[in-house]
Length: 340
Ligand code: 3EB
Image (cartoon, rainbow, N blue to C red; front, side, top):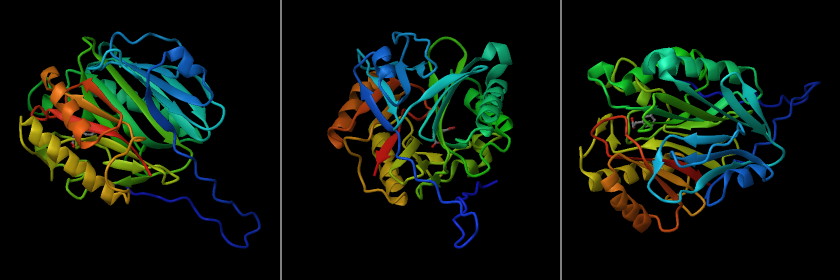
């Protein structure tokens, strides 16, 4: 079930009713900012705003999402997504959405207690998102984030992350017929069995990118669970002006490297990121417009992760969050954006 990547049909010369290829959409601008939700939501072109942790404010606007991961910085920045042009927003059942300039944000939060476990809840979430996205012009899902409770709890195939992977595939149907999106799946500690899923989609397709150092996740062998994880290592956005980078950790081939060694895992993770950028045709390294997130399993490791990233990538915006990586031996995972 390797996903295929389809390009849009090109204009046929001389045809009576030529369909010009649509103008590629400029990538959303994504930044971390010290502001408050109301102010960020009031700015023109704001597609979504994220706060992090239990101290982040609540807000009724469907473009606001309080992510259930605690930041290591206080006060924590907000993450702001902005597009060119006017933005509309609304609710569709449990799905909160916004759109503008050919981009779509959609988010939902489901309580596992209403659906029966991480597998049934993931299936429900992906069915709902599929139903919502499928009838829209912006039906090319480029990037998905998943945050669930107690991700490493349970043994063997019953580990909650593996059950989440089972449910994600059961719910997605033909959602990603033109290729898996880039993704992140991280465990939270919010103390409630909430599954949060949010996505970025577009009215034009992106291009999935794999990492030559890593087995594609959907080809992971059976030892990692009944259902291999369904995500691409990265997605090039339609205009080729940004790369959405999936959660990247010290996985080489399909194996975890340097179990329980933070420094070596950080080095391996950055080697993976370099290889991914190269394979995407992006200039190597990250720059001060390319925001990253580092998910850190042990709060006592946060200072070392911060130091490592600041030394290696001076000036690159990084948000450090307390989150569990989907394999118990992995201590840190990094995702983010690279603008061309
Ligand atoms: C890995 O390389 C680490 O299940 O959506 C990274 C990114 C990981 C996304 C997902 C899992 C996911 O396998 C784990």
